[in-house]
Length: 184
Picture 1 (cartoon, helix red, strand yellow):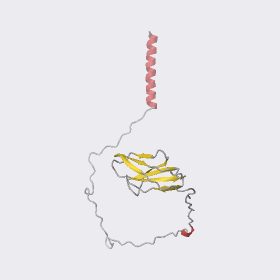
Picture 2: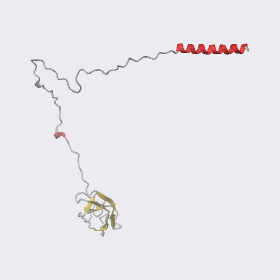
Picture 3: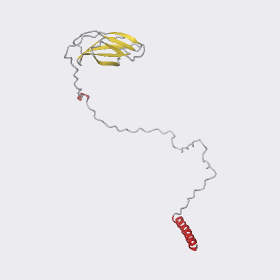
Picture 4: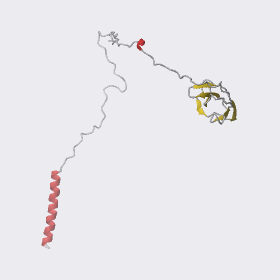
């Protein structure tokens, strides 16, 4: 029993010695903060009033600026006469021009117009339609419309609003004959 008691007391002493050593090795101190003043500082000038500077005698309070010269850099400019525009070669119609197209139309609903045509021209390979709400600006269109069937429906229009339509008859990709712009 003495042996157990001795082992217990030795273990406690060892643990206490260990904690003492750790506290000495890893000891740190908490820094102290400076004391907080108990009264706010008193301003030396009144609040919200700007200080007015005093002007010594003999000094003009409104000086006039003296002009200074601004240096300029001369740049070399290219002569306009040295510009050569690119050559423009418009497409040339090398086949027979189709006859002027004529078409009929009917409004089939407030938002749809049907365009119909009836002609047999061997100089026509395909058709095109352009349309819009302004006679001078036809923003919408369909290219490469086959010759048959001989009708085309324009849909998704603004309800009951006047539209302008122009048909084109094509012979190949460069020869076109256009109709008058009509308002179905």
